[in-house]
Structure formats: structure tokens, C-alpha cells
Length: 188
Image (cartoon, rainbow, N blue to C red; front, side):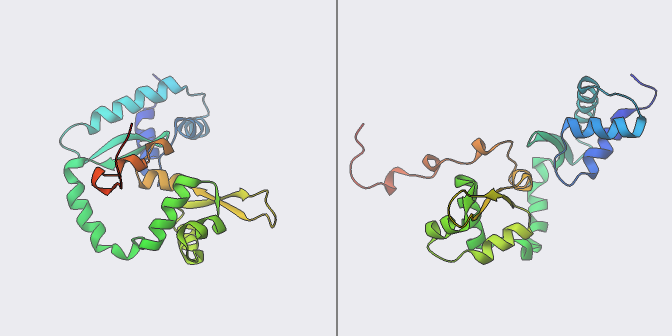
């Protein structure tokens, strides 16, 4: 190991990052600060040390691999306490319309605003604008259709916010369909 303790520097990077931070970002930051070439192996060893440190009951947080990067999150034992704080800050909550719009974008991305409005059946200008302001969605280019409408996709902040590593972890429709909600006989 090198003279300096890179574990503390990595811990500071993860702590100060508002989103999950990947190993390549960590390596770039360390290389710039120390003017040395760090390897993924060195970073992974330090990350394991940090994980071990925060696994103790003395800490309310833990280091979690999320969205192809690392982030400090509250341990499950404290979720209810943190949830109470979030309830008091409910002014930042998404409206029902924004949640519907976000769900459509998440499952159908990249998608245009017109397609969102066709699915919802109402104008979605305000919802799309709010989601862009909250950085839960991002502009993903322009469609090749006439008029070249803007395409929207979920952002990395969306992945962090909902605790996803990839979009395959989104709940599937079959997870919500209950047998009593079906019409007719189920023939297989």
C-alpha cells in the first residue's frame, strides 16, 4: 500500500458525492490529487475496508453499491425515522401526475412528450418540466420523426432515488396484477 491512506480519501469522495460514484471517477480523482496511477484493485480493497468499518452497529449508515457506483445510505433499521423527516418535507414530493409521467418515461424510454400525453390522455407539460427541474429525467436527444420532438429518459438521479442498479429492477406488470382483477378464465 502507498504512504498515504487512500481509504480515507475514497471515503471522503463517496461521502461528498450527491450521487453514487463509480470506481473510474474515484481513480481519476485520486490520480489527480496524488499524481500517481491507482488501480481498480487498490480502490476495491479500500472500498471493502470502508464497508467493513460501517457494518458495525456504531454507525447508522452503510456503504452500498448502487447504479454502478458507491453511495452511503441509511441502514434499514433507521428507515422509519428518516421517513418521518421526509414526510415533513413533503413539499418536495412528486404529484400524482408527475409520478404517472415518471412511470411512463421509466418503462417506455426514450419517449416523446406527445407519446406520454397519448398514454396519459392529458397535457403533460407541467409534469415533464417539474421532473426535469428535479433532475429525475433528462433530455435524451431528438426523435427521427417529423418535427424532431425531444426524447426523454430517466436520469442517474432517478436510479439513485429509487435504489436501482439498472432498469431491469423496475417492478414488472405481472407484479401488480392480481388474480381477482382479471376477467374471464385463465386458460394455459
